[in-house]
Each structure stands twice: as C-alpha cells, then as structure tokens.
Length: 227
Ligand SMILES: C[S@@+](CC[C@H](N)C(=O)[O-])C[C@H]1O[C@@H](n2cnc3c(N)ncnc32)[C@H](O)[C@@H]1O
Image 1 (tube, helix red, strand yellow):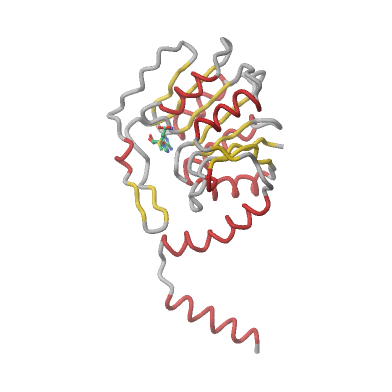
Image 2 (image 1 turned 180 degrees about the vertical axis):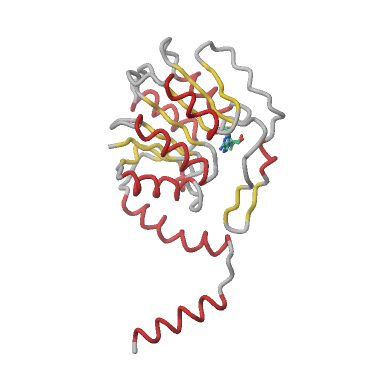
C-alpha cells in the first residue's frame, strides 16, 4: 500500500512539478541547513576583509603563499589579499575572462546576467610585481598554467566565480595540487545551486574532506582547510 502511494505521489509530482530553477534551488536548501549543523562553530567575521585578514595572519601566519583567484572582475579581492600578505616570495595569479560570466548566474528567482561583470577585457592595474593575470575562460587558461604551480608554497585558492560550472571545473582540475592544509575561500557560498553544490560534488567525487576555519555572517563567504 505504502509503495503504491509513493508511486502515485511520484507520478502526480512528475505531472505537476515544473522544470524550474526555483524548485531546484529549494530542493538544495535542506542540504545546506544540514551542512550548517555539521560544520561546528567556526569564527564568524563582520566582513570578508576581516576574514581575509584572519586567514593571512592567523591561519597562514604571514608565510609566503601561492594565491590563485578565480573571478577577479575589477580586482578588489586580489588587491586586498596582496595588500595583506606582503611576503616578497608570495605570488598572486588572477583568472578571469574580463568580459563577464560564461553564462547567466541563476539562483532561486534571481538571475544575474553574464554581462554584469564585463569590464571590456581590461585587466586591473595593480602596482605589485607579485601579481599576475590570466585572461580567458578558466577552462582555457588553467591547464596551461598548471606547470607553473610551485608546490613548495602553501596554496590558497579563492573561488569568486559564482557559477557551479566554473567552481566545479577549477576544483576538479586543481585536485592533484590540493594538499592537506590547502586553504580554499568561497565568496558566494550561500548560493546553494552554485558554489555550495560544487564543493559538495567535488568532495564526494574526489573523496576529499575539509574543516571550515572561518566565515562571514550567513556563510556568505567561507574559508576551508583541506584534510
Ligand atoms: C563576482 S565576480 C568576481 C569579483 C571579484 N573577486 C571581487 O572581489 O570584486 C565573478 C567573476 O568570475 C568570472 N568568471 C566566472 N566563471 C568564469 C570562467 N569559467 N572563466 C573565466 N572567468 C570566469 C567572471 O568573468 C566575473 O568577473
């Protein structure tokens, strides 16, 4: 009887439920609520700049780092990181098309058009020899960059790409270089269909684990340390 009811509910559901982004987002919310309960109580900061400072000073103890930023736009976050970590041996590389997102960013009933981040192909001007950029889709620029990675320096990955496709691509592509201790920051982590889902899927597929070492309110931004 129970089975028959379940089958009936399934058929009714399939007949009436629309194929909608809103519904997909709603269905991912409970998983995010469970995640919040599972991660313990990491320190929570009032702004992303305070989170950056905590990561640079306390977690990485001002050591030289290799910082890869995915999603640069006008350069605010890479500029902030390079300003905080002044070690001469640190290296900062920013990846972006500089012509906008490869697809619209759709979450719930909100859609950010791809052109929102179009800066006409212009790379930010940052007066710091340690900072460098790779222009183009991550899918085109990351593979040829990988031989340049120096595994002797602690790796910090900053994912501010907004999209599931971009986030999952870069995590999977960097998996061989993501070691225990690697720090990964997410800038739109609350976005359950995108950055959150990408981290979940990456960890499941590559059997990786992590701890959350810091966050901002409502987990908009988080920093994790890989196990
Ligand atoms: C939210 S903006 C970055 C904001 C920036 N980090 C800041 O703090 O101001 C997201 C950026 O990700 C870039 N992006 C997303 N997916 C990409 C991909 N697959 N390849 C290249 N750039 C991508 C977009 O071009 C856009 O500029």
